[in-house]
Length: 287
Image (cartoon, rainbow, N blue to C red; front, top):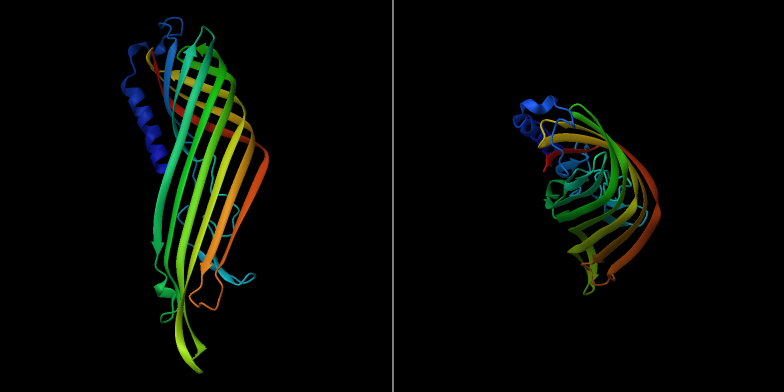
C-alpha cells in the first residue's frame, strides 16, 4: 500500500506539472476567481502500515493447554487489526468565497485476502498442524465537513480551519486448521495405535466508530487557474467506540473428548488525539 500511495503522489505531481501554464506566477486577484474546487487525493500517503492481516501464526497456549492463533502482524502485539492511519483514497469538494471556503471530504479503503500455510515441513510423520487457512477483510470510511480561511501569496495559498468528522472501520479475521496426532488407546480390551484429527476454528471481528473535530493547516500551489496541488496537516481529536467479538471452537477427533467452544465480546470507549503532519496530498481542479 505504501508503494501504491507513493506512486499516486508522484503521478499527481507529474500530472500537475504537465498542465502548468504561463499564468502560474499570477496572483489570486489576477486569476479568474473560481468558486468550485474538486479534490482527488490520498490520506496518510507516507504511512508504512506493517500489519500483516493474513498472518497464519498458530501457537500452543501452555496456560490453557490448546492451540490458538494471533490475528496480528506481531504475535505479541496488541493491535486490534484496525489502523486508522493506513492510506485512504478520497474525493472532496470546496465551495470558495472571497477569503474562505466550505469543505467536504470523503475517504475510504478496503482490503481483503486469504492464505494457506503448509506446516507439514514441521510435522513428524502424520503428527502436527495442517490445512491452516486464514482470511481477512478490512474496510474503513471517513467523512469530513469543515470551514477554512484562505490567505493568498502569489501562486501559493495558505489555509487553516476546522473539520467535524465521523469514521467507521471494520476488521474480520478467520482462521481454521487441523491438528493430527498419533496416540495409543484402550479399544476392545486391548491397546491399539490410533490417529486423531482435531478441527479448530477461530474468528475475530472488530467494529470501530469515532467522531470528533480536527484543526487543519494546509498549503496549496496553483499551477494555473484550473489546477493546483495541496498538502495539509491535521490534529484529530476523537471519541471512539470499539467492539470486538472473538470466537473459538474445537471439534475433537476422539469422541470421548467433548467439543469445546467459547465466545467473548469486548467493548472499549475512549478518546484519542492524533497528529498527522502530512495527512492529505491532493490534486485539485478549479471550476
